[in-house]
Image 1: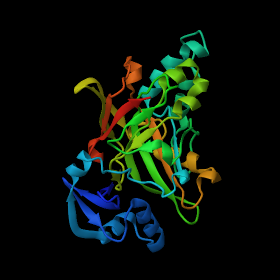
Image 2: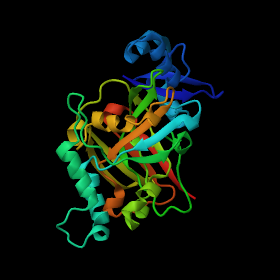
Image 3: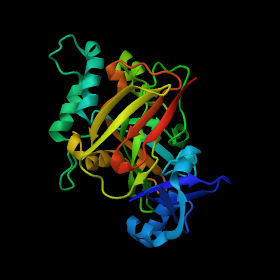
Image 4: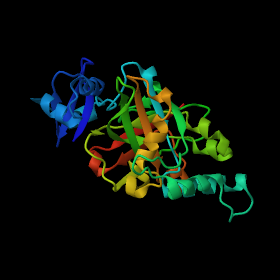
Amino acid sequence: MRIVQFKHTDNSTQVGMVEGNKLRLLKEVTNSYELAQKVFETGKFLTTLIEDLLSTKTVAYEPLIASNQILLPLTHPDPYRSWITGTGLTHLGSAASRDKMHQKFENSDPDELTDSMKMFQMGLDGGKMNNNEPGVQPEWFYKGNGLCVVPSGHPLVSPPFALDAGEEPELAGLYVIDPDGDPFRVGFAIGNEFSDHKMEKINYLYLAHSKLRASAYGPELLISELPDHLQGHSSIIRKGKVVWQKDFLTGNANMSHNIANLEYHHFKYELFRQPGDVHVHYFGTAVASFADGIEVQDGDRFEIAIPEFGKPLVNPLKQL
């Protein structure tokens, strides 16, 4: 089951369940945040509640995409109460590229593990949460609040001081904290975590700076269980031509940390369990064009697709 938020031409908003090329509209709620609140009020499973709220009305999906009426699949009414965070070194591809980036700064012996590979190895050895027992904690970073995220179809803006503006295709978990202070996972979405890899390459201690950039997630919110094995592809389109494309693997079967462990180590902090807050947490990338020597340009279009998530996440790059 997948849902979408969109706006009408009068700027009112609505939620629809994806049915092929149509969206079946939900009654009684105007956004997915209200939908989560209804879960808390009724105690119903989210899928059951959605089925209960389905109306007979449908709208065509493609025209909404073409006119940029698709919104982020989950937001807080107050953008300052959205936390945009993530974790890295959870996939082999990203660990290998970061190891290459950091090696010459961290040691002179190519056979000695960099800090990046040490962190990745820690995840391989003990990054799984089993029987409610947490594994080793992952790398963690902060990206911003609800002001720094954009929906599919809208530009990812790179600030004038940025050195690079590279895509990072990955899964994102979307959560609302319930009235008791417990995280409620509304679902998963495709994410473009969008980072400044040249900034990070100067010195890995610049990682925090490199992550303070815009990002995007959506367009659809996957409500059903996440498959353990997912294969997607990430592309960069320039003036109508593909200049880079790569398949990637994600999901628990392809990660050093399982998602349960990443969630535990994020939400173990009381700061991140404030009732009503929204959290968008990126789970790490497996590939990045920067690792293949690609220099992005203003106007390039990022496209990230995973078949199980429906429509791709598409964002043009705008460099200031």
